[in-house]
Image (tube, rainbow, N blue to C red):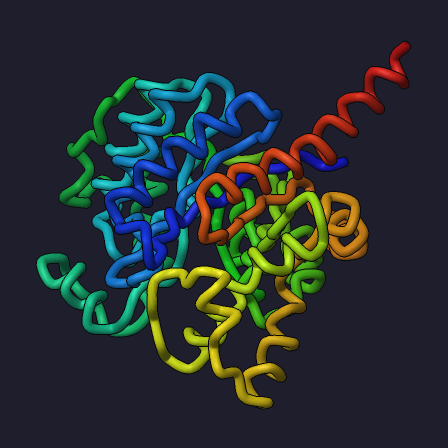
Length: 344
């Protein structure tokens, strides 16, 4: 079994305000730290009623401080929103404080709507169009110090100067980031939980294009998936109804906190709504641990994922913690027992 990791969006619900959602993230990270999950990544979003994390670097530090084993990182930092020097210095600082436990995942999108994106960047030197590549190149130059001799930044040093950036990953939901991550030799994480692009094609393109680099000698592909797990199929389906209604509303341009299963059950679905939900179900794995395994394994085998990262949107915080616990008990403990048996 490949390693499992966690992708957390600090879900806001109709009974959990954003401040409480952030505290729940810290609690969840502490809860899963001893289960054998490899990473705990958090995503950056702005002006989105269902997601509380707007300052991922701050939350990463808080989570790393209360955990012992799990790697903590960004899934990701939305690079268009930030000056690359700021990103370099904040993640060097995190790496200095928690050496060997920090990851830097980078996203190409702003993680918000157009107006908010302008507000985030209005004091920066804004370019028309997509300037992600330019920002990425600048971030790498802050790490390597390879500025041209006449460049005004040549004598600026990213601090702390004795610490390197943590491992770098590019995030994506299409072929663009997959091919880019391969060509520049970085790790790659594919967002299957919301992508319309084929995960198998993206992972294949990444591996085919991969070139060893100073960042990574061999490819490492992470598959991010949405999972809702419970002791019974019926309970998992009930818990998953919150996420399904949330997805349906987003498809209709409506952004709300995560609804309760009771609200989802009472929602007046149309035939078109139900058709959309059946389609979105292709990106959601629901059931008991055994059922989730049966659903997941074909995709894991087809993508040859090196790691699976689980995001779980459940209304009740205790049930969300239990979902991750069940997945760990089934997948991680099973893999550990298999290794032990093989070495006996």
